Every structure is written in structure tokens, then in C-alpha cells.
Length: 113
Length: 116
Image 1 (tube, chains in turn yellow, brown):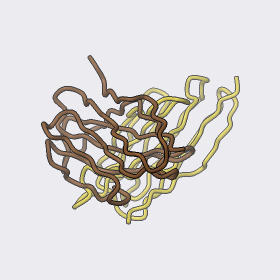
Image 2: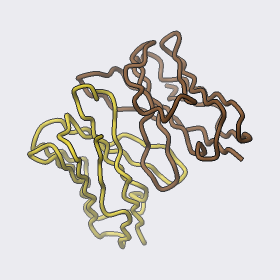
Image 3: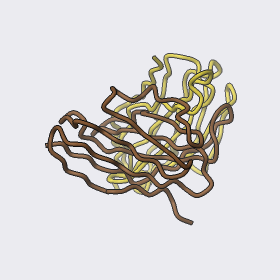
Image 4: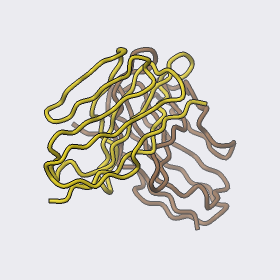
């Protein structure tokens, strides 16, 4: 079945440093979504990428979807302590898998003030 | 407006018992999803409803797990003969639609199930 791998598992940064997490799917995706989960909380939707090579920005966050629609990345510029949490990518396979999201294992981001 | 709600927030049960977990989606959302999240892992897909019918139940681990959504709104996840390995946070999510057009999913706070 479809697998989504995410690296790194952990990332510790000083406030102000940049952060990137990478996501790779074993199969071509119809779309990819990114979620953030704060400690003790539930996943909260950040963004959705649908087109090959798509790049979207939200303030300090930049999301990319690969040309082959099998990989994606999230980059945060100048991290802040409010960025702390676990970032998940989640891929939707399409075909008979529409509606079914396969999540990566997440990247836990710690930001030291 | 109200978000996705789940009850109970915590459930402790003994091995072998039956449990029901409830999810109340956002009003007007036709799609509803159940996931299971173990510590340190991403949510694992269990089942997806479009309206009253299960559009994809390929994530249910075995026949001890069953879910219903009889009126296309509230859903119940039912687990029979619980095992210690069923301990996890069970998350419910809903979205405006589903199928070929992707929609963002809104997650509830989850039910933490502990099987002793």
C-alpha cells in the first residue's frame, strides 16, 4: 500500500533559525496536505497542494509539491517559539483512494528561545 | 461555530470489553473520517464516510472494529473484544465533501482509549 515517509523525525533549532521538513511518497499523489499538531492537541490543517511543482506561501511558511507529485517540503523562515509542534504531511492517492489520507510520521519541531 | 466534537474524551476499559466512541462532525460536512494515532506516530486512516455510507473502510484493522453513520451526521466507532494493542487516541475529522476534489479535514480533540 501507499507509504509516506517524513524526515527528519526531530528538529531542534534556535529561535530565528530556519527549519525544513521533507515528505516522500512511495506512489504518485493526487494532492498533499500539511497539518500542524501542538503538544496535547489535534492536527490542524495548514495547506493543500494539488498541482505538480506547486509552491505556496503563508507568511514565513513555504510549501512545495514536487514535479512528480511524490514529494513535498515545508520550510519555515526565522522560526519563532509559536512554531513549536509536530508537522505532518498527508498524501491522498486518488483513484480508489480518494478521501483517504496517508500521514507521514511527522517532524517534531522544538524552538529554543 | 462549533467544531468537531468527540465523546468521551478519555475511556479506560478492561481487555475483552466493548466500547463505543462518538463523533459529532461540523454541521453541513458530508464527509467523516476516523483515524487512530499512537504515541509518536501520525494519524492512521481507519474509515471514511460520504454521507451515510462507508466509502472506504480499508483501514479497519480487523472485524472487531466497526463504524456507523446512520443519518449522515453523527458517527460511532465500535470496538468489540478490546485488546491492549487497541490503546491509542482515536481521532475523528470531517470535511465539506470528499471524492475527487480534495477538501481540508477538520479534526476533533480525540478520544484517548486505554485498554488495561
